Image 1 (cartoon, rainbow, N blue to C red):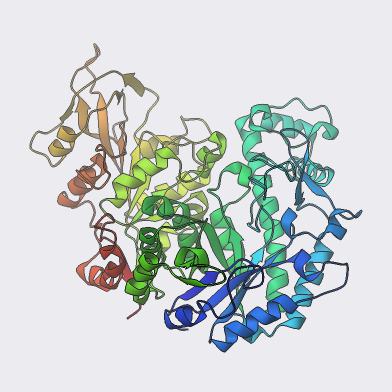
Image 2: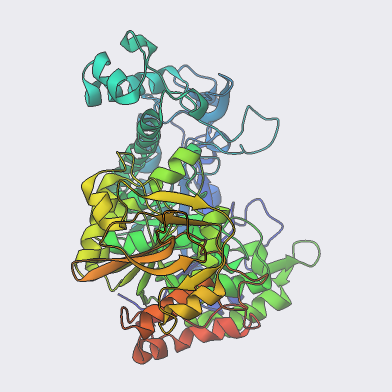
Length: 627
């Protein structure tokens, strides 16, 4: 396999509906590392009448590409409103997704529509019979969403064309039936369902999808979110299986997007796992020009695909600045992506009529840094862990402000993997170089994930958490107490305090000098070693712990009552609390978490992208491979 990254330029409808003449930009792209051009192949564009297939417009574009030594990435889209033929929309086989919020239909087909799938298979068959697989660099699957993403509708295509908004699109009869069948299969009886959910249903006909505000309990809401995401996973798997049967030796990508809010119906790690089962990858389509935001939105995909045996591609959501192009190139390399997508309009500009030229600033960035675009293997010693359970319960995405605050502190000192409960449960921590896991919040966490984290610590790992992680079960569970140092006597205290080390000569004294917290705990178990304490004592005389260590097996966990967010206006300036904690751990010999010098030198070829960023992105990213 070549070390070169797949570099594809997105042109939406290609040369057919644009001001661009056939050869505009093709010479430049061929000379500047572009390996393919991606164009949208909408179902309605090739089957405007039922059973009548016409690919002429794409034939012309493909001929131009091949003449310049550039291959094609067809984005095959069926299901979203703007891709569905009028004859299907107006016929009896159409079943539009219906929202729970208003009970109204949108323009996108319901993924539960049993009459849609035969038309999708016919679409894939027609395309496969018309084009040679050798002309395709890869195939991108557009299974749902607004523009083909493996998510539910979010904004719609054009305001006013149909009912559209962010929300839950599972109110149609087929979706309701599927939800009810899930509940029957999982719980067996309505009595058991009511017991587990805290609900009061008197019969199965009352069981139907609900909004968060209407959920009988948190357990019921988690069951709904899991079903909603599983439905999109099942739909995606059907597409992936059908595509792999038709293109056995071609790279296939599942398109996904968004930030994994529950209403999107996406689960990035599970999508990566499903794709890998078909020897396929995931294209994540949510980048912009913000380095940290790009990392947060893409890192779970790139880590998951590599762990499960697949691969990844990165795509911007829309316009990207010249600096953003360099940021994206670096993120692709540092993340181990196989494919980088960039839109034609981000590199080229119209100069009148049908004439285009490369944008001076953007093309200069591309020219200076395209040499870094090779497939690499990232080296991560640290992971930022996400609680899917907590995010689902609060209806938040993976880049919300609390997670970003922790990520800002962490990325200022080292690159990191992002892992979620699925990856933790499936053993990624034990099968990687990760030595330290930072928890993004105190939970709640799934029981299985907490148990896996405990095993990671017992095997020699280190966990650092802000707050005491919770599960959905009783806090007094023995294994929770053992892991966190919490006991039946543990009490939380609120109030402005100053922080003191238990030993003024310890490495933790410097950490205590850097922080200010408004909470502490007392009554920890005997297994907890208090490292930092509050500066006053309650009447009981007990120590008020601010940061403590709990050994377990070969490793240990550290729990802190403050925040890991940066403490300066600019996240690249000053030392965060997390940086001081890492330094103390390194000095004390608890962890050796920095990448080695040899690995850092292997990353030096990525520094070309960073030179154009004015030093705004840390040069701490180790990769293996490439030249």
